[in-house]
Image (tube, rainbow, N blue to C red):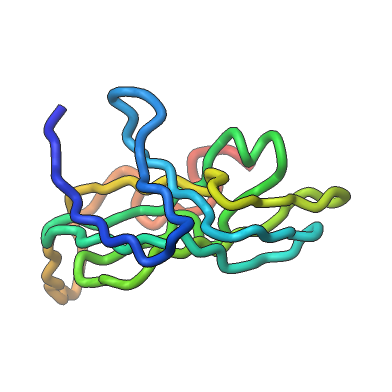
Length: 147
């Protein structure tokens, strides 16, 4: 596995530096710097207290944590959230409580999401009258037979 050094700036005294839970994990855990309660189906912006400098040629993807999703119903509204390499502001997560009955209490230091850094290509568009043929063609939702 290759490695990448990610510069991090701490902007809140409650911030905890992101880290992986296990060696070889793709996602580094993002933690809350604030106590917040999300009522059923309520969404809120949760601060992490850190900024990162993602190198050019890479992007950050903020993903939900599967344990929080199944145990509490904590999810992210815009998962995955995209962080472009030029962004230098604080990382924040748009969280939502998908539990219909119970509030979710997020405390300072709780893991709320995970950040995955991936290489991305610089894309140039080429306008054409026709695109190459494929077996799937223009088949979209349900085209593989699943209804």
